Every structure is written in C-alpha cells, then in structure tokens.
Length: 456
Ligand SMILES: [Zn+2]
Image (cartoon, rainbow, N blue to C red; front, side, top):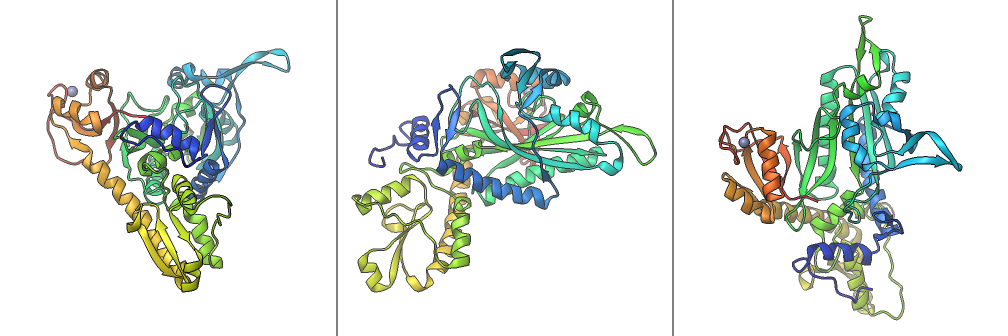
C-alpha cells in the first residue's frame, strides 16, 4: 500500500488529496454517487473532533438532543429564504411502505424548521429561555460536484440550535460559538483561521447574519471550516416561536444555529499533509497522550511480519502519526528509543531518548509538534495573503492565495469580482486592519476590508 507513491502536492494537489484519503484508509467512495464511507481511521479522527467540541459545548451550557431524519416538506416552505436556498439540494421521500405519501418528506438538509416547530410547543414563557441544544447527526444535500470529506451528498456534523429572549443574548451566543470553533481550530487542529462575517450573498439561507471561520488550504484555496448564524426572528416568526415576557407581553424569540462538519478532516489533511502523506495535529494524539500520562506508555505496536522497518515507517508516515517510537535490539541494549517526528522527515526529526524519561519526552515533543504545525500553517497563510489595493493586484493574488481588499459594500461589485475572477468573498474579518480607502472594484469609498479567494 505505502509503496505506491502519491502524486506530489506540487504536481496535482487535488489528486494528491484524493489518493491520500483512499490510501490512508480514511474514507472510500460509496455505491451511490457523491456519498462517502468513513473508514475506522477516519471515524477515529471524527470522534476526536467530536470529543474536543462536545466538551466545549457542554461547558457553555448546551445539551445534546436527537431530532428525526425526516421532515414534512411543508416545513421547509415556511421560511422564504430557507426554501429558496435549500430547494435545489433537497432529497425527497414520496413513497413509504409501498404507498404514495399524502405529504412528501424531505431528508433533513439541516434542522431549523423541525426544531422551530417543536419549540413553538415547548416555549411559553421567558422562564423557558434560553434553550441551548445541539445534535450530532448526518444531513443530506444533493450536491453536484463532490469530493471526499469536503462536499458529499450526506455528511456528518453537529448542528447547534438556541432560542433566546433578547436580540443581544442571541447575538452574543452566535459570537461565542464562533469563538469556540476558532479556539478548537487553532488549539486542537493547529489550523490558523480567520473569524469573520459573511456577505449577504454568501450567508446561510434564512439567517440575519452568518459568521464563519475561514482557513487557507495547502494550495492557497479557502475552506469555510465552521459557521455560526444569528437567525434574528426569521424562524421564530415562520414557526410562531413565542414567549410571554416579564410584563405579560407575547414576544417572538431570537434564535441561532451553528455547525461544524467532517469537512474539518479534509481541512486537516489539506493544511498539514505533505508529499509523504498525512500529518496529524495533537488532537488526534490526545487519547494516546492522555494514556501515556495516566498509565505509562501505551503505543500501537506494529507487529506485522514480513515487512521491513522501512516499509512500516512509510506506512505510519502516510497515516500521519505525529511521533514514531523505534525500538530495536540495539536500542534496548542501550535502554533508549529513537523518536521520529512526523513534521520533520528524515534525520533532522530523530531523537534518541532514554526509556526511563520516555513519557515526559513524548509529552514535550507532542506539544512542540502541535505548535510547529500551527506556526507553519500560519506562516504559509501569511506568505500567500496579499493586501490587494487595485483590481489587478486582487486578480493576481487569488491565483495562488487570499486577497485582502477594500470593498464598498455593494452586492454588484461582489458579484462582478466573482464572475470575473472565480474568487468569492470568504469573509469580512472581525478584526479590520489598514484604515480607510476605496473599493477595489468600483473605486467608491470602502466600508470594510474583506478576504477574497477561490474556495472549496
Ligand atoms: Zn464597489
């Protein structure tokens, strides 16, 4: 398996990615076009992501729930922007048990509608608020162009849904969850991200405001890695989610929703992977580290017979294991092991460590590797992000990375830039730098600076 070389990233980034996902046995193509099968190694990565996020969700007061897969078609029609946005992507069930259904059912593309419907029954008074829920599930969106992990018909994610008494509280929740995603991306996945607001054209169908974390992949393209939506009162009005306030007045709730999906696995591969294969951040090694701390050393012992050490090294490199412990008869005689860092291939990354201090040495090296992965990705993003003040500069910048440009706020300029360069506005960063100036497209005074890039 590992003997067959991957194409290099420089040769063909897209094919490097596809082959790596298959060869590292993360996922495979399903019999239905556009669906994926997540294999045990890929699912273990997802479980690590789930644990890291679920911990943060619960620490901020959210509870997990499970809503059904099937939603009455009429629910989707109740919020006008939602139906416009999702209709082309819906999978619809029209027959059940051999009988034509009186009302078609959609397989959930997301659950705002069915949750709004239930909230209208459950929420009566300000005392019932806030409602803070999350569910881990899969959803279906009938995508035409698919790629393993990044865009598939069915994908796994979490969707958080909250209802609040005031606008301020709902807006604070939206930004809190954006912060949680950014914290997870940076500290667990070692992926530097830009938190920002989406333009009207790019926001979620039915949202008042959409925020996202955007990351640069190894080929300079952008990937939206998590989104948090302030839904205003749009869904509360469509589903009559109301409460009696402290003065006995009936009010509509303010709601939010937020999601992060198995795309994050694609992001980890595309940000950290190299020509030898996968490079995993500490998140994936968290369990191993915890076990080392608790119970001395626990390692995966590669006992496969008939394979040379070199073959085994390549195999583990392909699978992205952050630290490899090599222990041969000579090492045992010296009471030492050789530790090989995945992020520094070759001799440079090899260290001899006494067996007596191995847990402490491994602990220290894993922390160093995590920081090094993040810093390398951040340096790459900085080197491929250009302050583009003219339209010519923007066009050039998006050929290989991000353009950070001023924009007048017009939907027209945004649409023209997309049409002419294939770069979309990824986000308007929450942290604005560089002062005032003029729109990169029309020359009128700018209202903000935004990131433009070609995206997955
Ligand atoms: Zn303009």
